[in-house]
Image (tube, rainbow, N blue to C red; front, top):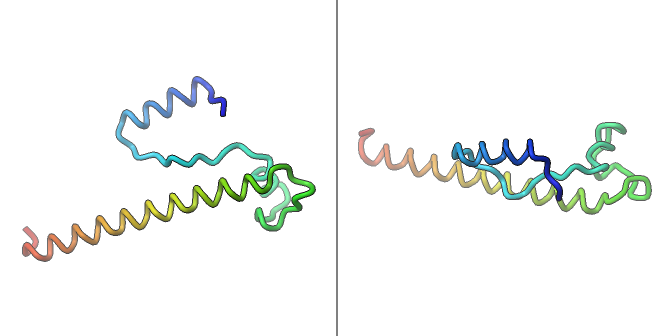
Length: 91
């Protein structure tokens, strides 16, 4: 994937600031633009009319899996923190 210098500068700034970023990127795809244009989901689009629809499905599934894993990890960390606070009497 070719990235612009502007994107790389912003990305570096975000990473350098310690902001967590996903490994999976949502690529710029015609299928995602078609979702908006035709007011349909990826599943509702015609594979014969939208190029690389299968790749868009894979890309969004990978992104969603990473998002869910991130939410579960964050929830688990907060639950452990709450349990630790409770077990130490709030100290």
